[in-house]
Image (cartoon, rainbow, N blue to C red; front, side, top):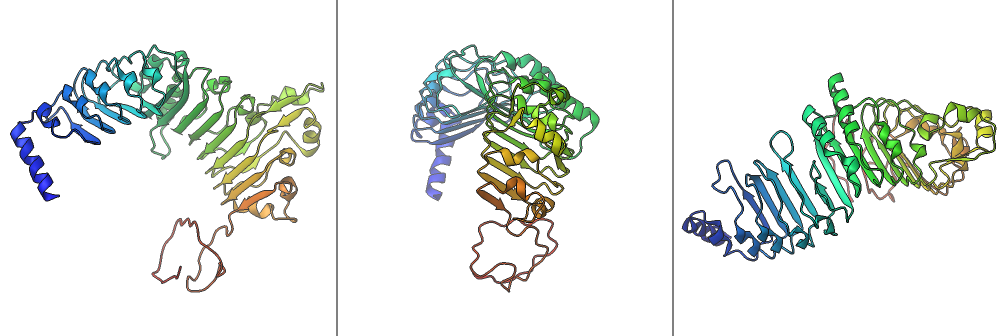
Length: 427
């Protein structure tokens, strides 16, 4: 290994930073990271990069060039292209549709605002593409489905750029992931308000099928969410909202994940999309809520106490004739919801196959088999998985307690530990 490094250093000194010459000697490279601009003499990528036909990963740091060489399109085996833009990159190579194995394309910009980069026609034909991380989507080719990830949202610049992006007009955008500032401390009012403005400006097209919103700190969700009539998957981690939108109105939603909402205390008819006037109507029109939902997951709702159905027992029994709720739900997961006390009455009418409940001590006690107050609501479910031990405050590792000798440890979660003494445990 020392000889290889020595030879490489000699080659660099002889080439005098002439990358075109240097590149001739490394045609079998699989991974290439280039530091450009600033203290580097490299400001643009040389055409010789196209000789690396075996390259799988190309990472350009502080790239200052206005364009990329067309020869980059010769890298047929390239799978990941990651560019940190430090200057005035304005356009991408016209032949990028030749990168048939490209899976992840990321453009990060270091300056304020997002550069106005034009995507070439044919870019949408990259059928292997899984990730497109770039804020302003300016491509005109609507022939393929697009995936967009927007990271680090939450300031005035983002609001302006979000408005200019006009995501609603990107008809072939199918998957959208919005990531706000991951700092989970309680934000100031101005931060919460800015997050809400940014999210409102990022309204996606109605054809969107998969939406993720992470670390959002706004007080409410945007109204456009319930207009996404083609949405199949929804995942949001919205820390400080107090009410959920009427998601039961989404007609084709199949998977719903609700994570880490710190201020939500109750779920009721507003979550399902039932208006008070609809509850009082006596006509025979049947209404289905969450008609195609198959998987529902709650995680980390630390203040959540109540999950109500349509109303009281008598009212709910009467309304059940008019409302079909989650008729296709197969999987329900409730984890780390320590204050949750009860389940909705309509749960016993749902054809659930799997119920998973972890770190919900109050609810677990009320769901005891045969004796718990909530047991009749879940007794029909064939596969019920409670966390087997709940909360263990202490145990003697040298003894068999709290587990039998036949127990096989597969997963352990340790929180708020003050002391972990050394001991020998056979395994």
